[in-house]
Length: 575
Image (cartoon, rainbow, N blue to C red; front, side):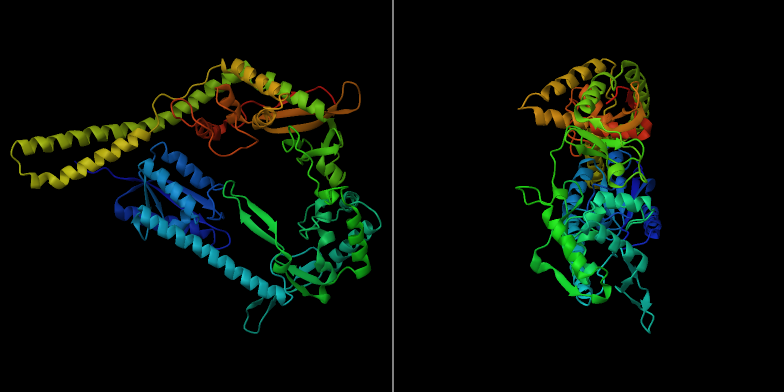
C-alpha cells in the first residue's frame, strides 16, 4: 500500500525590529522548496507580521494554526527555525506538547522533525539570544546617554538632526531645539505655574489647533504625566538641560503578553547635563515643581492625578458615541466623556453626563430583557448551526479519511500476519509490519482527538435559562460574599457600552445606550457554563460535558461573521 502524502502547514513570522516584511516571502519560499523535496502537500499557510517572538498571546497566525490543528487539517507544521515559532522556552514547549497530542509533527529546516531535547536546546538558545541582545543594546544606549545624546525617541520641543561622518556613516542621537514647539512648552509651563489646570491648558491648546507630541490633540495626562516616573511635559528634565536615561524597566506579563513598566532605583539612572537643550528657565521650572508639590491627596501622599478610584460595575466598558473616547467619573456619582473634558470641545462636544445609578440600572435591565430576545436567538441558532455544519463537514472529511486509512492499514497488517502463518519468512515482512503498526497507532491517536461528528447545539430555550442566570447574578450584587464574583461575571457579558447624546422627551439632551454583548460569554452563560470573568477575559474557558471547549467553538464561528449577532440595544430612558 502506498504511504499517503503528508499534509503540511507552513508558518512564518518576522519581527519589525530585526527583519523586513519581505522576510515572510523568503521564509515561505524556502519552506515550499523543502515541502516539495519531501513530497508533502502544502494545504495551509499562516503568518504573523511585525510581531515579537517573545509571546504567543498576540499572534493571530499562531492562534489560527492551533485551532486548525484541532480539526485535523494537516499532519506537519513546517517552520524555518524554532525561533520563528517562539523565542520563549515555555511557549515553545507548550505548543510542541499540544501539537504532539494532536498527532501533528513540528519540523524545522535545520533539524527536521523535532523531539523534546532538540526543542528545549533550540528554545533556550533563542531566548538567551534575545537576553544578550537586550544587554548589548542597553549598554550602547547608556553610552550614548552619558555623552549627552538621545538614547531613543524624541521629546516634544526638539528636532532630530541628520548628520553623517566623513565616511558617510550616520551620527545618531543629536537633537536641537525646535523653536515653534519650544514656545508651546514654555506656554504650558507658564500657564500651569500661574494656576491654570492641565485640563484647561489642553483644552485651550486644542482650540488653537496645536498638535501634541504624537501629532494628535493634547490630553491632560500628556501635560501632567507622572511625577515619580518623570513622564509628562511638566516633568521632563530635558527642558532644563538635564538628560535622564533608564528611568523605567519594562517586563512582559507571562499571562497577558503585555509589557509592564516599573520605575528604576535612583542609583540606576544615568543623568547628563545638556545646557544647549534647555528650553525652560530655572525660576519657571521651580514654580511648576512647587505647585505640583502642593497638589497632594490628604493623608495619602499621592498626587491628585495619580489617585486610583475604585472601579465601578461598568468602568472601562463605556465609550462615547461621538468621538469613541472612554467615559469616566466627572463627579462623585456621574460619568462623562473623557475627551470632552480633558481635551476640550475642539475634540468632542459631548458633555452630557449620566448618573452611575441610572446607567447601571438601564444596562442591567437590557442584559436581562433585550440581549437574549427569542427571535434574535432563533435567527442566530439557524445561522450558527449552518456555520457549525460547514465547519463540521470540513472536519468530518478529514476524520473520514483517517478512518479509511486506518481500516486499510489494519487490513494490510492482518494480511501480512496471514502470510507468515501460511509460511512466508517473517524477516521478509518484518519492516513492513513495524511500519504499518506505527502508522496504526498514529492514526488511532489522531482519531482520538479529532472533532466528534455530532456538533454542539443551541436551542431557543436558552433565552429563558439566560434570563434566570442573569437575574441570579444581579441579585448577587447585593450579597457581600458573592458581590465580586457577580460583578466580574456581569462585566464579562459586555463587549462595550456606547453612550450616544439624544434629545430628551422632557427637553434638553440625554444619553441613549447602545449595549454590545460579548457573544461567547453570553452563550456560555445561556448554556449553563460560567460566564468569562471580566471584559475580553482570556485563559481557559472551560468545556462542556463532551470535552469540547465552547469558547474555541464560538471563536471559530464568530470569526465567520457573527461577532455581533445580538445587535446593540438602544435604551431611550433619560438621565
